[in-house]
Length: 145
Image 1: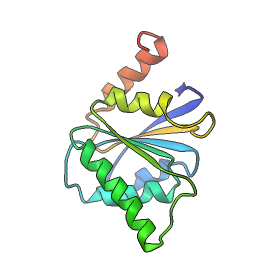
Image 2: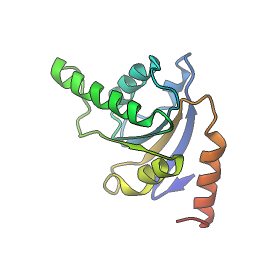
Image 3: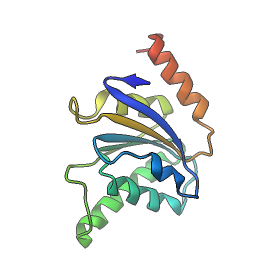
């Protein structure tokens, strides 16, 4: 699906690292869904997103505020340690709902053309997949704005 000239794709996180193969390398945003705090794999995910030059990360779910903080910490640690940083400012948000995070990534963030793809990265073992699909189909049908 496309919204606001942005291709939307869905990737479910698995510990086998195959999720990495579905991430772009430029001009992209990530909508990250996470329900559990203290997931050690989140640091690995944050590092991978930055390594692939993500422009925006919108977190949602029960652990969204914590995930947002982990991402911001990774950005600061990389700066202090002189490790790779994307060549642009990385914006991060945390949202209460799936719909708010998707709306932010699709319509409110980034200059025209700066974000070409939005990747929904689901770290909830697929529990938000149907909700994401329902929202995107309703958006495409024009039943919500």
